[in-house]
Image 1 (cartoon, rainbow, N blue to C red):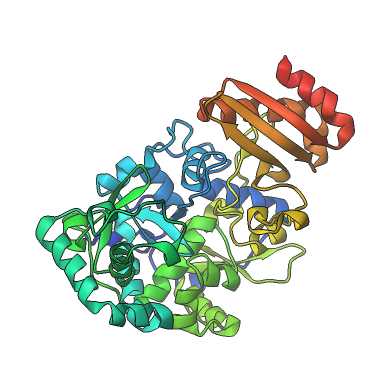
Image 2 (cartoon, rainbow, N blue to C red):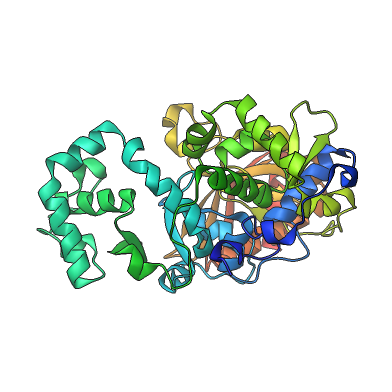
Length: 440
């Protein structure tokens, strides 16, 4: 069987073999749903509010396609939080075991991400265009340092898995960024970017590189698809991961590069392609009441969307999301579906921050209901909530605060914290009740 069709029921890449093309006479009228139904469906497909949570990191990757890697560690890193919120038994850091076993791999998507190994063909297509897409300064550096690049490549080829620490002279102080990397480290990243090397695994967050043919397991298709096949995979993986989406979601879920390469980044060209897929019966159009944008869903998901989703329960514990979670990272998405404006303020000058350095959105039931600025003090085993903002009326009720308490306790346990402190609460009149409930 073709490796790109081995993913499960939530998998966009496994969609094609499970659906027969519909004839014109078999097509039904456009699906019409409420904004609340749309939110419920997105959270179900994403695995955030579902009766069928993921049972492994691999299931998470297959369900949402790409898991963003991030270095910020005031709380657990982005990739850990994304996995934890969909796989309840996840242990911090265990995501790298799946990479070392060859079940997931890392490369650029919308950012640096971990993806299921079966999705590699689309990455191969992406790599095939990166020689021409490379920014000029990087290309110039590669030409100028061609000899070093060749030496590093040959060392990996001859000696196997290699990390930057084993190359060149050891630096006297830690690196502070690309501009401060030693030349051998830059060569490794240059070769990785072009696809000549892959990350075989990470240890202590440090990358270990090897040749792609020694990283990609046997049976995985490593050949890039055609542009038309890539376009279909982009649509299928986006709609399969989000449940439903617009042309903008198709253009952004994998970052801007595929949309620019395939459709010139043009809305009308993406929608024209979506109309072709709809005519073939691969996708169906969805209307969300009160919104003007055209939405689409996979035909595989259409029947579920037409039926009422089973509730996850009104007492569902809140989830503390990563700012780079798949429903948040493209800022138009939470704004459109939840009317939730969000900015990662660690990239904002301190004087201009509104909520705090690294503020985490709060998911309560099917609502983005607030945010909190948190820091984990690992040596003390304490979760510090510097500020908590409760923005949704349902979270302000006694039942809502109970859900918040349960969610914070789960968040603390995940971080191996035995205590929680809360400094500032907004609205201020809830400060005493929130603190008292946590102390109880």
